[in-house]
Length: 293
Image (cartoon, rainbow, N blue to C red):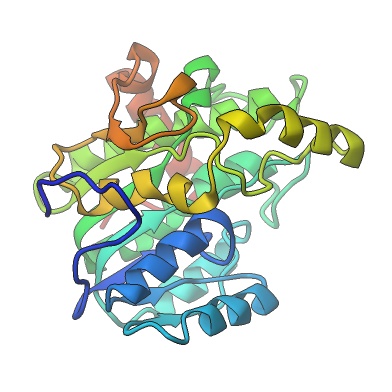
């Protein structure tokens, strides 16, 4: 761990260290994976899209480290289990970064609401299945949208209540915040769990209105307050290598916490609930059939 906060996406030497980063074929995940490889680390970047996976490997061609891209789809628990069974190496840092947004309600291969399934349930299952191989740190990517989230454990997949993108996304991100607390409680001092959010990073993830014209308008209006993907990856990198206590929440320090240098931020009462954390853990176990060994 480095006591000095990162000011650019340049990591301390990572030779002889292995990172597992989900969602590494685009956006902030790709920037973080390339930074780890540039620092000499080995990156395991499980990916669903093989074309993007090949592009990531090619982009790391000049790095002193390396990137491997085995197949995995977080929206398919069978795929997650196959990947976990195939993993033969120990992991120093696990970064649960992959996420999804959608303009309409969709379901995963297991019948989960897509945002909950991809942003929480898939990562929950993956982490439980490989936790015995993680040696140092687990980073969970959050979002300040958790502050308006509500977890409906009786109807988490919006089968009876009305679905909309913000309600579904904020529920999934509140699950992530609470899951982190329950996970740290179970791991104890063996592995450090931290959280990070990228602020408003210009990755295209926000372009989910279903209208190209409206998406372009949103990008134009928010561009003065947004930051490049590499800057959005900086809080994740800081959460992964910085000297922080358990359950630190790292995000940008600037306007509306949308951009700026990474710093530890306060988590609201909603995101710190011990009761909520246990309810979310029970939800994860119920839906995925996984638990920590």
